Image 1: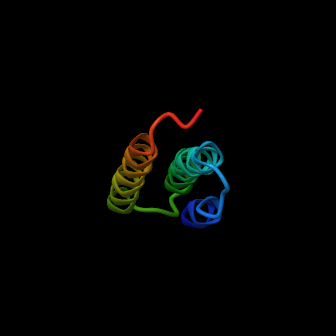
Image 2 (image 1 turned 60 degrees about the vertical axis):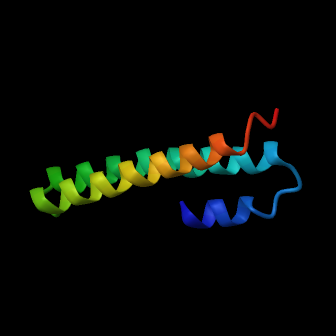
Image 3 (image 1 turned 120 degrees about the vertical axis):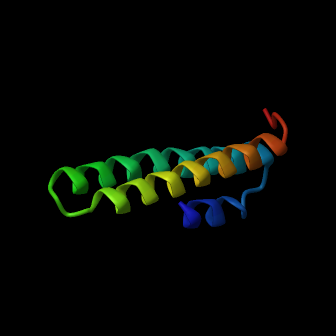
Length: 74
């Protein structure tokens, strides 16, 4: 997620950068599903799952807010 945002920061336009941010945001959902699968297989505790999901939610919100702060760009 962080690397996708970093890669996108080298974009030549706001539109392209926002596309990278959208990919990073979608990666938070992908990672949340991985955490849920690990939990279902008893490889992640309830506490760890809760903590990771909260962190991923916060990160997703930060990426969304940052992307929105860049304006429409389209």
